[in-house]
Length: 109
Image: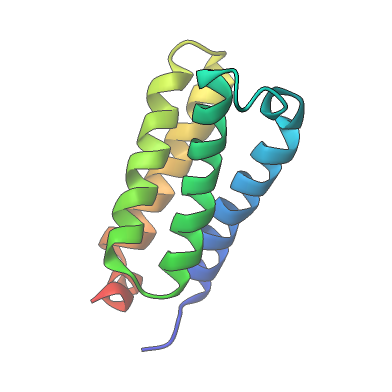
């Protein structure tokens, strides 16, 4: 089965989100050896990139990783502005639909 456009778009968004997150937090990453928070920032961003790449490569575990990743961000968003929470919930809904409920989900089997 060939990759569907929604899978390409969604997986690419995760890759871009990871890269943008690393660039955005570049100043924090200067303290990588001294700060646990900097390590956590890098790990979270790398997980988005890894999940996006391997979702494009039909790895079933990658869609579960990305579901966990966006779910984690929804929980974090409870402490941020409502607009950010709404955006993360919408993205979570897209992940569930595209990776698990749509015809595209058969791509991972």
